Image 1 (cartoon, rainbow, N blue to C red):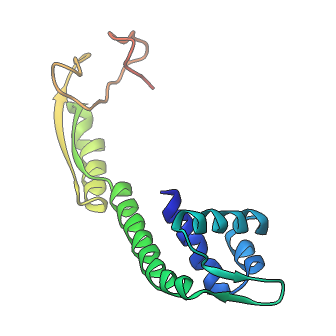
Image 2 (image 1 turned 180 degrees about the horizontal axis):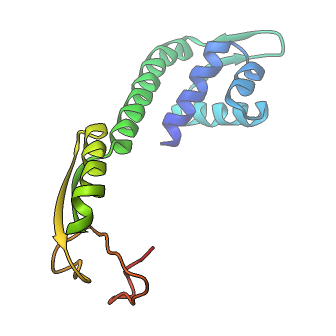
Length: 159
């Protein structure tokens, strides 16, 4: 992954045509950026950039590498954004235990609205009384009403 990250740095340097401007755009010191490009050049086995105080120019190999790296970095960015979108989207099936008297009036309308906002979610509502066993009844969540009670298992949370 470091190699791909260094290619992305190289693409930014080539886009700006200047180490200082690229470093500013990337939010890193120019010395760090220059060192990372040098490491990339050593790994590749050839120079990408003719460096001097007055001239910035890609080598022939640098020009070839730039074209391919630009496409590769763009594709990697697209993949990352797509996967992040999938990972952040709520999906799945939830089994919720709710006291019967509260299900109709409070929770079913809330769950219905939630499922409209999140079409990849399904909620199964089960009527419960007392203190259900979340494991044996395969519940993901149980909503219980009580003033003070001890939970049967220390791994359960109450609020």
